[in-house]
Image (cartoon, rainbow, N blue to C red):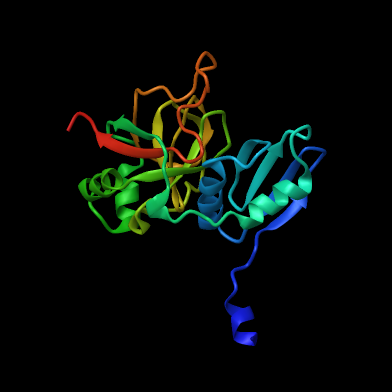
Length: 215
């Protein structure tokens, strides 16, 4: 019996958050991605929005259609979706790999610039969560060899479309802003427009492939 208890999966912690939301606390980003994928397809009855972050998921619901206990029960009973079973739109982003930090990234990784580009374009990424700026997606799935630290001195201006690396993440700046990610390339593809519905091209769960342009 004791052994069975030790092997039982740990249930997510579900905390009240305001009048019509719960905050789900998890132990890792991988757990967030897996549970968010499971909850999104389909959404539990009455749930209106999921907002993933690095270790949490905010679950908003319509209090006229459900209640906190029902939502918490749905969260705890929904098994996380394994990576191979996660559906999601696939977005291809063309990239010119001429970023100002490409050589530095290569040196940090012990690779050539061409090997950095080959690794970056070989993977399929998933938007784990969004933040920092509207339309900025934190993409997981980066080859561990490309896990490099942020710049010691952030730039005051990073152009829109800059493709960067920081730790376990890769991403694309949707608009000009300050930033400390290592910049390896650029894309002309627009990522955010208030006239779109929804306005962000990259949303949690979206799968992304980077395609080399101008080779």
